[in-house]
Amino acid sequence: MGFEVARELHAPLDVFVVRKLGLPGHEELAIGALATGGVRVINHDLVRTLRLPETVVEAVTARERGELERRERLYRGDRPPLDVGGRTVILVDDGVATGSSMRAAVVALRQRRPERIVVAVPVGPPETCAALREEADEVICADTPVDFDAVGQSYDDFSQTTDAEVKELLERAAADHVSTAAFG
View 1: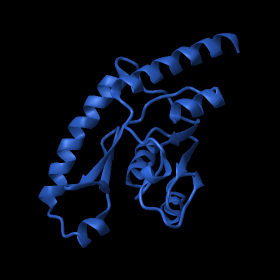
View 2 (view 1 turned 180 degrees about the vertical axis):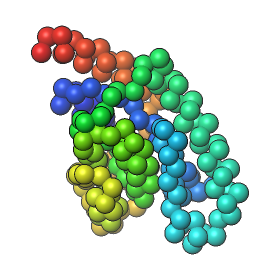
View 3 (view 1 turned 30 degrees about the horizontal axis):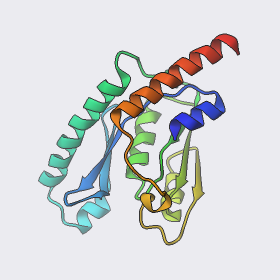
View 4 (view 1 turned 90 degrees about the horizontal axis):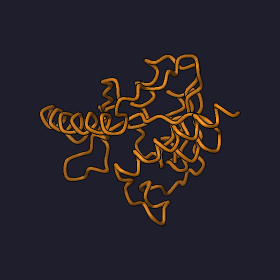
């Protein structure tokens, strides 16, 4: 999704890695999230409601931190992150459910001092999209079904994007942006 948005806007594309902290046994339910830059967001209400011991939260965090670091190295390689200071940044995802991952991304990105942060997703529950408006400067949720169950229900094919596909799209976007900047 990010590739298509960047291409349509003739904007640079960068990766901002976020990992959901999924409830053990129900990994799609986010008890929190980690983002590039060491930011961790925990859904304390959910953790309390589920009576999850801190040891479980820490174990999930440690596992996902390792995966976040692996993906960051793999996707970024030796390319430094884009300097977003003073710029408008559009955070794109395939959708939001609890909003934990997007919230972590916004909090982490704020540390880099962009002028504005726009969250853009095709689908999310109304209450999550409304809550994200407290964090981001603008939130675009194209579809907010009241009977929302999961992001995947809005897609015919919700298969995961592979590491190789992510790397290839980032490389294509970088090459396209360089050629556009040189001639445009």
